Image (cartoon, rainbow over all chains, first blue to last red; front, side, top):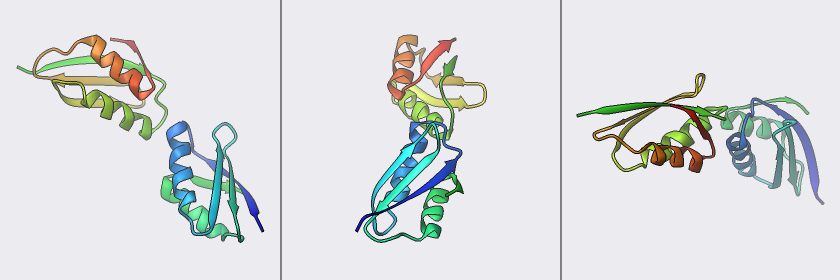
Length: 70
Length: 70
């Protein structure tokens, strides 16, 4: 089964920011796909099993940004 | 002798942009130091001999930004 979870990320200003978030969240165990929309801050995380929100938040913060909503 | 040249770069929005410009301009032959100010767009290029403005402009464009003034 495929699970998708949507978050809103603040602080991204350019394509490099999108790359940094994509890279960090892609490294979360179980994540199979990551989509980031720079204009809206939308982050969509796809995985086989649900992934802990805390792990996604930690990955976004590791990249230097914040999850402001889900 | 040390030469410094100042440019203004437009389009940089975050630290990743600064890194990209710094990296590309640092790779221009003869350049010994590069300083970028994100807030003002200021780019200061230091070299032993004067470096062609066209080479600096090309490096900034390679990074994905534009020199808007000198």
